[in-house]
Amino acid sequence: MTASIKLQRSTTGITFEMLIWLWPITFAPHIVEEFIGDFSHYVANTMGGFVMPAPIFLANNAFFMLILVGLCTWATLRPSPRSAFWLTCWASGNTFWDFFCHLYYTAASGHYSPGLVTSVLLYYPIPLLISYVGIRQQRLSLRATLWAYAVGLLLLLFVIWGGVHHFAT
Image (cartoon, rainbow, N blue to C red):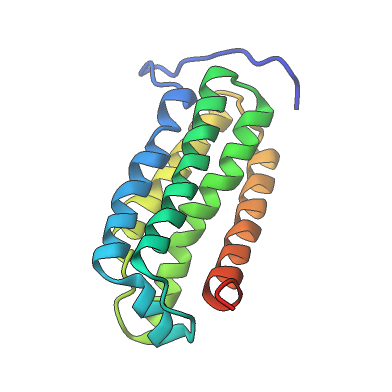
């Protein structure tokens, strides 16, 4: 990864720095779907986790959103492979990999996992689009993008491990 970055626009004029804001935009309706669908009780009833009180659920997701917006701001104001990498790590864990979790939860439990609809419609395609543009516009190499997604998966697994089974005790 080089320290300097050449800003390139696509033929449509849309840059990576513009598209990354889709990550927090998609995060918001997903949290609404999880909240309205009572994802916390779903976790308790299907995965043996604990019921997270609504204020804690909302505070937790507000904290995750603040991190995401902070990383988007950093990547927008200081475009670099480093800012793109850490944003992609965090965002892929919270979106792309979360899609697979909701899909798995639904298949394994035989019941709708609150968050599945927004995961299918937003969390799967949008990270792929952003990553594709990031690679095309040389914000990250394919290799760095794959590493960022791997780190994102580890971050999500840690959140699931801690949030479902360990942080409540």
